[in-house]
Image 1 (tube, helix red, strand yellow):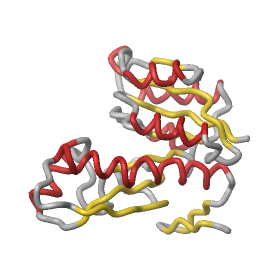
Image 2 (tube, rainbow, N blue to C red):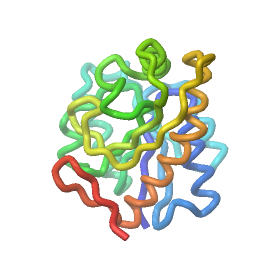
Image 3 (cartoon, rainbow, N blue to C red):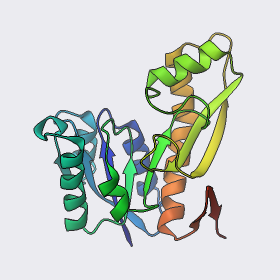
Length: 208
């Protein structure tokens, strides 16, 4: 059974999707062992508590640098024997120390079809603002392995959602969460835990 750590900074809607999927038995050979927040008052910690999952706070403000916080994070992950790290709305920069220990074992969900509307500054509603400003007819979500380069790791899964003429950033955000993010993230986590993902250069192969 693979042990999963979910990293959060906010409300935890993607965490809740993982908790719900786990409750339905959809995360095969894996369990959420811990939720770690970079913000002390993140509502995601309340979601973890309600689900009986241990929660920890590594307050970014309490560390002199991103590197110092990353080192503390790696120490905690090792202490808990974590196999997979899931970034679910984790708004804190991490450094190479994490990827040296968890190579191709850190995944993130991004609310666009990478390589569109991604990279530095593209997070939260900003992503959907850019999509609407560009006039795209479809957007969506991407689950990818995390590397040091922002939103540039190998892509595991993608799903598209329609962009409607009357959309606002908020309505598009909600549709992409419901139709894409909340489905893709548990699916990718389950595939990892089953040992069905293999990385070949930029390509992620899904094994039968």
